[in-house]
Amino acid sequence: MARHDAIRTPVFNGPAGWSAILPPAAPRARLQGAAGCDIAIVGAGFAGLSAARRLKQIDPGLDVAILDAARISEGGTGRNSGFMIDLPHELTSSDYAGAGDGHDRQLTRLNRHAIDFADAAVEEYDIPRGWFQRAGKINAAASAAGIAGNVSYAAHLRRMGEAHELYDARQMKEITGSDHYQGGLYTPGTAMIQPAGYVQGLAAGLERAGVRIYENAPVLRLESGAQGWRVATAQGEILAQRLILANNGHLESFGFKRGRLMHIMLNACMTEELPPEAIRALGGQECWGATPADPMGTTVRRIGPAQGGHRIVIRQGGYYRPGMRTSARDLSRLVAIMRRKFDVRFPMLKGIGFEHAWSGHLCLSRNAVSVMRELEPGLYAACVQNGLGTARGTLTGIGAAELACGRKSAVTEFFAAEAEPARLPPHPFDTIGANAYMRWKEWKAR
Image 1 (cartoon, rainbow, N blue to C red):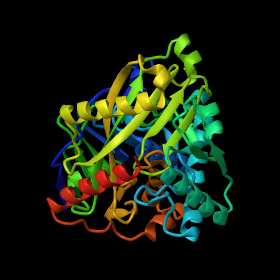
Image 2 (cartoon, rainbow, N blue to C red):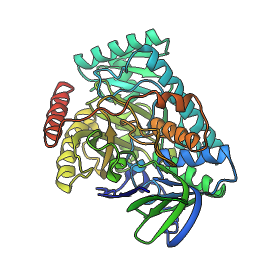
Image 3 (cartoon, one colour):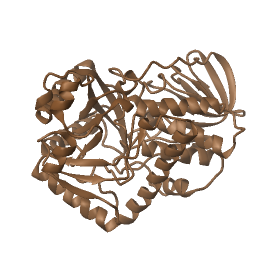
Image 4 (cartoon, rainbow, N blue to C red):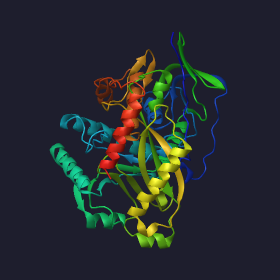
């Protein structure tokens, strides 16, 4: 018998902007009293919802229940930037290249499997197409160092045989309306999603298929016994034969992989809806997404009415927080930085205000591995997405569902071959070192 008490539950700072710009969703029931199911899932983000869908594909008769600490799309998923990336996107590297060409080819195939899985869910559950667009993305460069990073990554893509196109400053202005960017690297395989809308549609489709979803139900205790796993919240509990943890870095909150997971807080701002005169002054294309050529740079998206109105989203400012929490002071400081970065990129929009600002949590390992495996008998993990919650979360959710059903696949074999997350330096050296490293990387990416 094993017992794991939560040392913390998720805390969110600022509204989930992607959710806030959608029509309000009807609330779901909280867990009250005792209930049972075949398989319980902790976490209703990309991983948890994908796991539930894969379980229903394998065995439509399974009784599946999901518990989430927040409302659907108001936790981590509504704070995601919405890039479902197919290619290697290693955040700790200088140009996103991963562990080698062979590894990166394999991971690219699996990422595309995840994107296809999501695309099929959009069709099956009648999710609006505007919330899932296979439009590709741009690595945007604003300096000579950024241009060099794009050239290096383009060489890696050529070796892999992957389609890509290098843009010059003129082409970047035609797309973004901004004179800020000196170049870009376009790759066509990324799906650009409205992350809150997509997961809301996925959750609604799963409910129609018989999956129970409990919102505002942070899990406080996991306990194994002869009948399976008991999952306790403040209001009730579920007894499940098998259990999937799809709670990313909060895997560590239950005692798993302590001293091995890096918890990074990122912050983002979303503008008010752009009025017609601002749209005319900006020019460029209606929808596009730009990740920074250097992984520590600034991410920018422009969206249109199909995703919640004419708006621009900007994300920047990572810092290491082992407690997985940010503060109002942290967020206020980063909003001021993002304001300056926004004005540099879009001087014609200086009067446009930020309507929403929020922080979100990334979980990484030093050696860029996820935790998708059986942790204890009947307990499976779909966690540690390494900053790639959309594609990697979908992929680990698929894999955990297959493991729970005794299935083997290319997904389960890939994650089974991964090493354990590497150990971190002891606290507080982990925090000091990580924050100093990120400040240096941000300075380099300026």
